[in-house]
View (cartoon, each protein chain N blue to C red):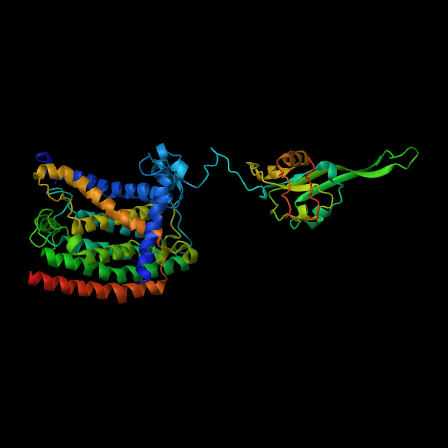
Length: 345
Length: 177
């Protein structure tokens, strides 16, 4: 990746270190930006508050203070908990987030792994976090945690289906599972013969985009789909017994996954790192691409957070009915229509 | 049909609220969230509580006869009263000296007080009043036991009674200050 950007031959271990640092930056920077910009500030403004205002100018260093606070806290294991499973659960959740980022392309050559079935890999890995959440719920030896874990599992499995089926429409239209290929298909695409802005699939796959956004909201367990951590009945669901660094890992996992899903949505529906109508050579795009991706990601996360701060929580049965009886049939129809139109045109 | 417009309207409400908070003077003016937020930035600007807010209980010491009604009615026994009797000089020449109660101690433990206001209601001599003052927190919980001089200082912050309804025959009470 970086080797071709700098046109320097790097040893394998040097490249590995750069990849690890790049992945850490790719995971932590959007997560920090999401928490600081949206969770602290936008939420406060939408509720006529100021939000954090003391740490740094206009509270911009609040996140540093929060992380410092979490790192000081005691690493608690509740009595009766399954210590090993309890300790590993947040790591499983965070690991699934990190691996999701591995296949997201940030430029023509700026990727960590260019798999032929990239989008399939990303969605498959994203469901590994279900195991981590179930581990957390089960190992906490706490009925609230267990209920939260079970609810989260039921919800994540239910919304995995519309998520994957919404992506299928894009895959059919692009004709590839490779994420670079999907970006290329959007960059060179045409809408009814007009190719001036390429073909960002948000225009032709708008039903798929809406389905993806709703299912993504549920996958991230953000309100209105936050039944697993419903504080009025479950304290904090599977997070109840976690403190200190392990809670911080869950927290990073939650918002880094929001970043990862929005990165995937940006690739699938907004054209990824490509700027419509502008064709730089690949060296420029390798530098510009991550910035374009970050802007598009932040746009998508803005939508997610906007829905989050607006809507009240679904009831558990409504939540399941919404997935199985509404979203999945619509996404199946979407796939069928996309396939017919793909063959027709 | 009824559902979808409401859902979209909700998005408009939250976004409009954010716009009003960040740009209180309109979108062309620079953002000023401190002005736009409805919250009070407490240590920097002081909140203006409602005049009848139950902030703290103030004591008019001269009116207290140490009748103990408030201490006995207090649900969590947070009022401490000590007094002794003394003979006041007679009103007329050659009269009998009057027996009076001298208040030695009148403490309210605000760590226990639950701000029910029964003592204010029950006081027959208009010695206890509600004050909207709220800045009397202490680092140590034992220091929340405030004595009669402190309670007396709060009398200055007690607001006047509000006017009764128009045409009322009842005389408006005055706060003794």
